[in-house]
Length: 632
View (tube, helix red, strand yellow):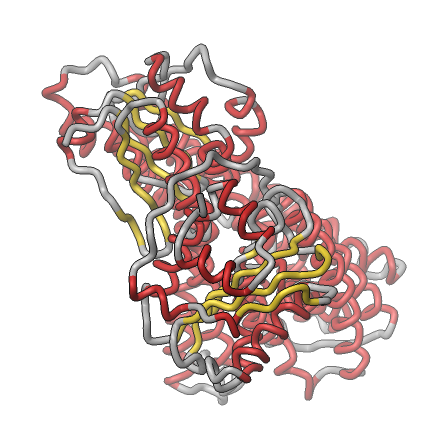
């Protein structure tokens, strides 16, 4: 079949919004009498994927996604590129625009001609959103390297602080190998960050140039901030080169892809990054001289300066200036200065760990895991563990971390703690004077920064919670026989007086155990809460669809809770939640809960269905609606 239009939908979690946008586009296209095929980028990967012929035949491609998709497939095609919320909220506007044909032609590697119909979403707000998406692409690829490499280095220290040094009496060959492996992983951190920022902007050509520019940034000691600058530099350079070379004959496309763009990109980007890095050396030496002049000053002033510098770039040139000054003074017998530097360097990763503890539900699973690992990394003086958190919003997170680092350094100097070792974190406690006070100073600084980070993370999550209006109604297909066993009337609870999201999740888990749907209510509620921490399952119109997959669940079931009063449950339209449909799935069924969730998401796009569901007075009627469709 030849489709007039193609659509692509995807959201960061790849579940409900992905399918709701797809359903809205399909329904609107049907109403307007045009054909469309929608490709979904969900948690199961890419489904309903386009063929090369379908792309060739399509007049317009509508991309409604908040995640990276393979857009280079659409080179030379008319492309509408908006957020997933637009796909749900304004599908009619998107289809009308596609029908009009007044749409930008995509020219490859992020370059598209502007359209007269571009709205405010294509303005400054959308630019910042795109920059954030590019940055997150780099951070998400960098994070596993930081965690894996940091843990390897931390474990190597367990053999002794100098166990990786062949000339030390503590030397251990396994420790040296672990330290080297971990160091190699950490060494890839900046190049990978730079490369995948560039890849997000300029696709595959950006990846190559980004790696080289990132390596130069790392080699010249510019740290992760240099990696971020290098990534955007490389990505932007690819776009400029694509534009500059666009008039070359078509027969030279292969040469352009494998020779001209990589060579010119590395040449221009490499030299640009190199010369951006050179001034850092002079600045670094100047900061070291500046610091040395303050070593005998007021402990509060010295602590403030050391804390700000240590937390500024966490392993970059500013941090290194403080660290190298400390090690130089160690050689002169000054153990006081290094104590403050070490405290300030230990605080950032610990602060991220405390932030996750204080605001667990505001972080996704990967962030939470990294935060917990940072307790280990921080304890062994591996400051870089905090970088993935700082890189996401450097202008807000870095100042918060500076506060904690400065407090820890100030207290350390006030307590007159002395640390004779340049590294090792809490492993060197046996040789630290006033060790208890030193740990106390670090914990106070880390807890304060962690608390402030938690408040900022909650604020950020509230601010960025998408607001989406109700989407068009749809015709509902009858449920399959297999779905009939998902829900019985004793799994539906009406007019429950529960005051919070946690109370609802606990209620669901306890009822599941009582009905022998699950064998361990605690594991079920923990799973439900874990999913909520990755992103709220609150939808629109007061409905939430929390879901969990666990080995304690016996078979896939739905649990329905109708609330007597609405409760606070972050939702797309900001309204209180008063109707909860929970999906419980055994751990062994890899796609079952996604199939159920996809079907539910599509049902909930029908306003008539939602109105009937919430107005249903009996368990039997609710069951009939959820397993069937709209009652006529």
